[in-house]
Amino acid sequence: MQVLVVGAGVVGLAIARQAALSGHDVTVAEITGGIANGVSSRNSEVIHAGLYYPTDTLRAELCVRGRRMLYEFCASHGVNHRKCGKLVVATNEAELGKVETIMAQAERNGVEGVEMVGGNAARAMEEELFCIGALLSPETGIIDSHGYMLAMQGDLEDRGGMIAFETPVEDMSHKASQWHVRFGGSEPAIIPFDAVINAAGLGAQGLARRIEGYPAGQVPRLVLGKGNYFGFAGKPAFSRLIYPTPIDGGLGVHVTLDLAGRMRFGPDVEWIAEENYTVDPRRADSFYERIRTYWPRLPDDALVPDYCGIRPKLTGKGEGQADFMIAGPKDHGMPQLVNLFGIESPGLTSSLTIAELVVGYLKD
Ligand SMILES: Cc1cc2nc3c(=O)[nH]c(=O)nc-3n(C[C@H](O)[C@H](O)[C@H](O)COP(=O)(O)OP(=O)(O)OC[C@H]3O[C@@H](n4cnc5c(N)ncnc54)[C@H](O)[C@@H]3O)c2cc1C
Image (cartoon, rainbow, N blue to C red; front, side, top):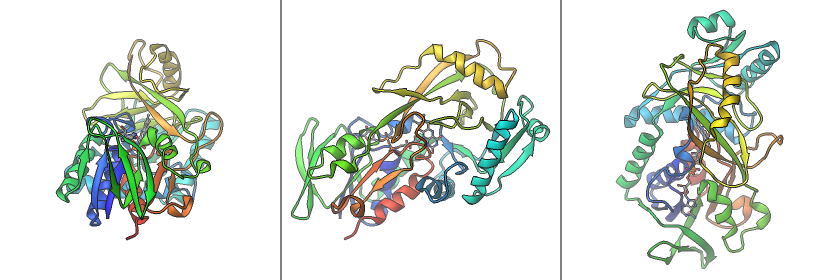
């Protein structure tokens, strides 16, 4: 089949690669001039173990299996990564109850190697840490996500697939068993495809509304959950990722490490109405307060505004977490069309399993 994937983020690239490996003729249309210019370039680059997500959700299933596949992909394709492990820490009795609940969920999700450790044992692993107990997740890691996306682009191109940059998809309609897709950009055209996958990240809802005849009630609302990061100007204090207990809308301001050995903190949750990518330095105050609950010796003036990313959420403040929404023909009634909505964390970790699921929806 002639398959069009809209969006060259980590999810679009994984789907395009999987479709090409399955023998389809694949084109990716990307509005910007390169891969990974959307949500995929603005995240924590953590390979999540799959601890938190409720049983029987796509996020639980696709993350746990996706993580295993991602480690295998990194090994076979030489993508830089490190299984550094993570501690989810409790700094008081109430938080200890929450960490134990996460532990039980992690076991239900089939996450390997998780264990509860006491405060002293945690401090023996990370001497700067304050906590009264923690969940140790040895399977959590970090990845060079750009290297991962380049490797997927390589696999796609080896199988004859291609990416058209600066090529926005404007709209489409289904006629005579084909999708007629209208492209903008410098060479506007209408081109037919057998199947279309909408992996446009923050643009997915907008595009779905421009699909002729697509049921309006099947397009979920888009809520923007900005996550700000602050860099740490100094030698990293930890060798593992350190997470507090989750907060409304996110996993809490945690310690992230990159493969270059730098330490940073974030992301927090800032509910916004319109996309913007500036980090307000005044947010540092709340970062100091939160980080010092588990790292009391965080020095003054050590945090510097870094970058931010925007989570394409389906639920807002106080509304609880939504699952990934992957809408195929059985959901919306239109043939050979899959729309992906709300692909926030752990979308990077789950990208290979999302791709398997989506390509499985395509039928000759
Ligand atoms: C702050 C933050 C931290 C995160 N941390 C992690 C983490 O540590 N681990 C993890 O597993 N996940 C994490 N995630 C989630 C992960 O980053 C996302 O799930 C993933 O990057 C989504 O990829 P995507 O391909 O769906 O979207 P994108 O990367 O946004 O790709 C969509 C692409 O579509 C293009 N596009 C849009 N509209 C059109 C159009 N009409 N025509 C053509 N192209 C179009 C855009 O330009 C873009 O390139 C985090 C997310 C955020 C925001």
